[in-house]
Length: 369
Image (cartoon, helix red, strand yellow):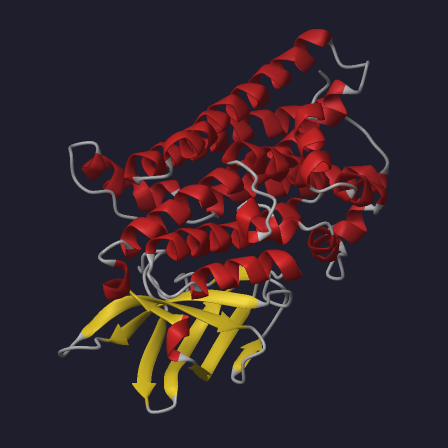
């Protein structure tokens, strides 16, 4: 089997025509400000990738999704990162729909996303220094009209394309004083939602009014909200790993296709990246077999940091072996190398997780920094 053939075949099976569409678009256009990548993903039915077939989705397994992300990363790293954010949101929403007794609203939302190819974004808490990535970045207030949400977040590459934004908030308790953790589902066309900058820039919610049923409180989930967010973040680590490994794989693919490069060097790179992919596939299979729990999230972080180390070793060697190219090709190689190293910066970074993982290894709970 040729390099990346399995991953691209998975895309063709689930999202027919997407890989070929991406391949025919010039690379600089795919990675530019007016990239058609998100539109092509949407048109291929990509938003429903992780939605169960019973809810009009494609019912992809975690292993399928990982392979899709690697294939997308090899064509358009920016698209792979943006779609990983959508899949994080979808995995969280599917788990929430399964856990809550809301009269079917959750499943209606899931089915609507798949049926209408809507894109969802997950608002991260990275605007506040020292905040955990799953910590609330929004505030919520309740009045006679409904729930009002305010704050600033990022949408991870989907700011101008999203149809729905999922954010964590601290909401007043229904009974008694104080606040509790909740998840708000914010339609992107709501009054008070604005975006500044490029796709990955700030999303501001200015006194956005939501119907009460679009706020899911921790108390509604019988203590399962932390578990749902943990599961979603395990998915996110897996799919980010696949996307960034895809960017590195695009460089390796260029080397493998160059007969001037000694066989020993080609095989060395092949062993490194395929070994990293095999490690990621082991996490995907665990998710498929038993669902993502705290242990799976921890292992997904171990694998993600291992893949980072593999990328840091493979990428400069591949760039060196590619050698002198035309100016355009050189720009593309440099861009891919930079993108591949972007996994180092994705939350939570290894430095952020050093303390939490050390505590987890001596039987403490796993916390996401």
